[in-house]
Image (cartoon, rainbow, N blue to C red; front, side, top):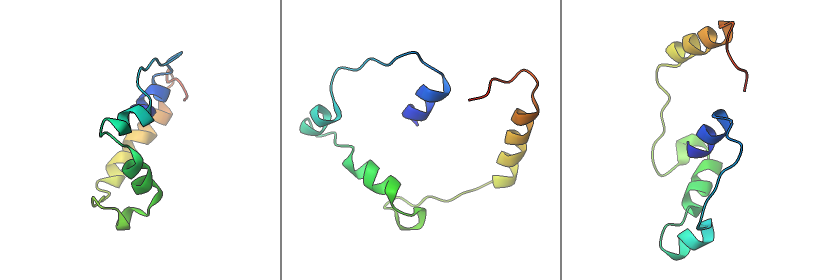
Length: 72
């Protein structure tokens, strides 16, 4: 989500201090997240279920119909 927000916000640059390896050394490994994202949704450790797709499609259609939108 954070990476998506960075790209959607069109930031010019991102600054960070510790690397993901530094974070892992401190006990905050993100390896599981990458493993989970590569697995099919139905076989992930935390169940992921899609809800309200029709409502989401309406919101996306409204966005696409906006004359003043900024394409990403």
